[in-house]
Amino acid sequence: MPTTSAPSPRKATAAWCIVVLLIASCLRPALTTVGPVLHQIGDDTGLGAGGLGLIGALPLLAFAVLSPLVAMPAQRIGIERVVLIALIVLSLGILLRSTPGIFLLWLGTLLIGVGLAIGNVLVPVIVKRDFSRHVALMTGLYTAVLSVGAATASGLTAPLSHSLPGGWRTALALWAAVPIVAGIWWALLTRRARRQEYERSGSVLQAATGSLQVVPSPVEPSGSRQISLWRHPIAWQITLFMGLQSLLFYTTANWLPTIEATIGFSPAQSGFHLFLMQIVGILGNLSVSFFAGIRSSQSWLAMILAGFLVVAVAGGLIFPPAAPLWACFVGIGCGGSFALAMTMIGYRTNNYAQTMKLSGMAQCLGYLMAALGPLLAGGFANLAGGWSAVLFVLLALTLVHFVAGALAGRDRKIGVGS
Image (cartoon, rainbow, N blue to C red; front, side, top):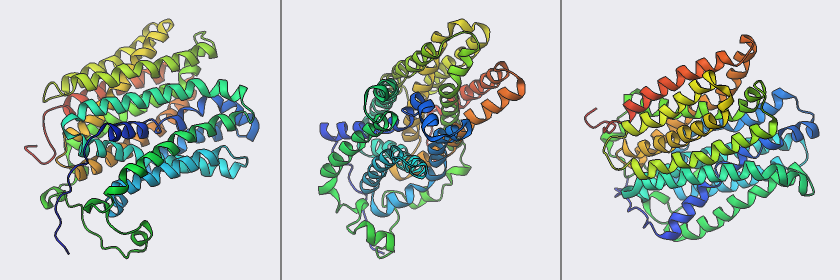
């Protein structure tokens, strides 16, 4: 086997920074555009509540299944090529989901999950590799872009579905333009780098058929490869911190209108509260950019952000009429916790190959929690005869989230003094 040397990180030019943020903007609209037109999809396709719920859960389940597998093709044919494939698959999935036919609806939804799973894992890796001196700043920026994309898409989709010919299908299909533009720009910027060691010189077909030699990632030392992340406390602390914020966010996003309806809020008011939650979440994202790097430990910031979630759920139990305020607190807490979890994935690892593995682990289990949270919350509410019991369970989970953040934020690295 030939000897290899670690590749140099790509120069972090303005164009490279912008295209990474543009890719980040693709990673939420395909999910958040469904909710505002879900009733129209049901009326058009005849799907019941269970089928409509699965449309939202299927991409998250794809995240859980595929996240730990992304490292294999990324190491074999290169991060840049795999990201480009993800953008193509995502664009195709969005278009197929909007094409008449129930089979294409499900196929498109599944492809969306595949494309998003790859992007979610690899964007933090690119940040670790190419912005190693500004991990917190860049992570805060790209998670803020995630929030802006999610909020913009959810806010515009319903009006577009009523004003455009084709209704909800056209409104959803329009969002394929973003990954298409990102994919073209990405392909142009990465074209000259495809002969670098981590990119492989062969074609995707050669790699798929096994005619390329498999070489372990040249930047991962042999001692690092012997460390099992699945047995390492730091990896589990970050995974739990990541997973619980995902569960809390998606459970709130799914059931907030239903919960608020029981206390007298209209669907329009609840929709605005969801929009507000996602917009205010940008403050949480940006807080990580400004504060995560000022100390070697991020435990203090993790506890503050988790504290917003504790107060939000407790406030929902004690004084439900202040729901808009609690929605803002959820936005800050979840938005900041997500950005901080992504930042800690970079801070707690020793090289970008290890970052890729931890990103896969954290997002695998995190999105499994995200998929199961709304389903279990709905079932438990039915059994308990109301939402108060669900809120008490969520309150307990916010406390676990608080502890996990305090532990994960400590100044330690996997396999180094821990």
